[in-house]
Length: 365
Image (cartoon, rainbow, N blue to C red; front, side, top):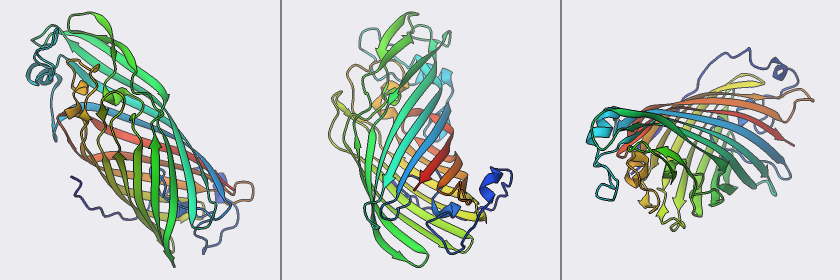
């Protein structure tokens, strides 16, 4: 259950070495939705702003994420302990050992996201996003059914297009220096959920198996994407907050449903120059475990157990936005944000997140 509230403040960081070309050109202090760099939230926040009627925007985001170091709840747990003491859900089935004999060491995800926004009216902005994912996990295989002798490490990989997201941002209220809008969207199950790769088994054989849930590319279900976003500004500072959710509908063709997600985030930003703003963001995420299971995902590894998914995490992010001011650069934006967890409480046994980043380019006209 998601139960944390958030407070976000402003961050004053001098990044004068970033893209000096953005520093030239006219600027009107009263402008909020134009070239002001902090008229957009930190780049890790989606669906944060609306556009004027007839305006378009295209965007590209590169979003890498790194995970390592296994956790059980809020505590770290060693690979040897997992291999010798954590029960294997599938024990009793043929060739299944009593404990988890294959242990993840680290995982890297690289997401390339392309998006488009168009405003048919001043009140409504439509948004579409598609993402291409690359996932790689390194694992250690322990020899036989017991003991701490290892056979070695191996990698599993998967890449392809994920689920497509379509949303509408609908203005609810707007008053001097403040704005509130509704986020209403749907995620289409365009990402694959039946990918496989070669694994090293505890019996020292190479076998092609269906990849665990976290290595697949999509949810396999039509998912609702509700949200509510607030933005405010005063002088050289701005702030905002957003609730966003992922509500799964039904069961996918493989027999399971990914857990619902709820996230609350708040941010503050300081406009350092007319072309540069810096930001500090705090977010809290709650994700449920998986309901049901894919009968073809059965292995002595934590990622094959649906109960080892979900949990709660609190993240801190620092970022910068740049907005072109000269006629040649007007409409162009660059942004970056680095996020690191300050609290993680996982369900079962999972890899912890180290960091994730967002590097973005946007162009509006």
